[in-house]
Structures are given as C-alpha cells and as structure tokens.
Image 1 (cartoon, rainbow, N blue to C red):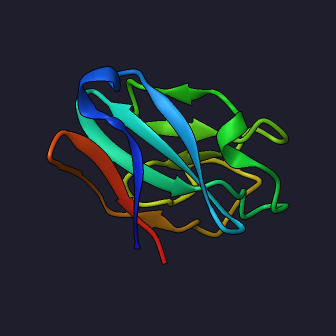
Image 2 (image 1 turned 30 degrees about the horizontal axis):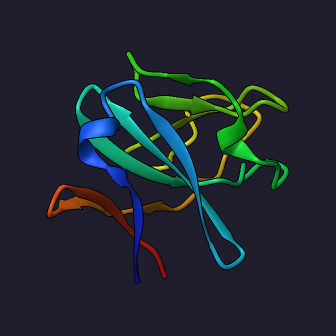
Length: 103
C-alpha cells in the first residue's frame, strides 16, 4: 500500500519525516535529492531509530539510544552495537506527491 508522505516541493534535501501506517513507523529522508524510507526500529534493541540524528553527507541515520548508524539505502548497520539490518521501503514521486510503498 502506498502512503503519502508530503508534497515533493516542500520536502527539499535535508528533510525527514516519520510516517505511520498501522503499527509500522517509517522514517522518510531526502538525502541530497534521493529519497529513502527506513523502518523506525533499531535492530539492536528495537528502540525508535528515526528519532535520532541523521547524516546527510553519508545518508545514514544514527540510533539515539546506543549510536548505531544505519545506511538509509540498504538498512545495513554501519557501526556497533547493531549487527542486523532493518527494513527499507521503496519511495517515489507520483503527481508531485512523495509516496512510500509499505506492506
């Protein structure tokens, strides 16, 4: 199911937004003009991943609890203590609206 995130013209590079679909929460990021969506769950302790800072230069989100960095494109952890990836989701622009495809 596609879920609307925002109008593309008000979501410039450096923007991020948390989107809810039922019990699933997903962070959507505009990293240098490329859109990414990643599950809002740190694989280390199931904490809220997308409440942390993110680095637009490396396109990584950093867990606010223990500092694990996750690649926005793949969900792969790039630093400990997390060792397992988190889910990522397709994002596209349809008729000027950013949409994320969620299960």
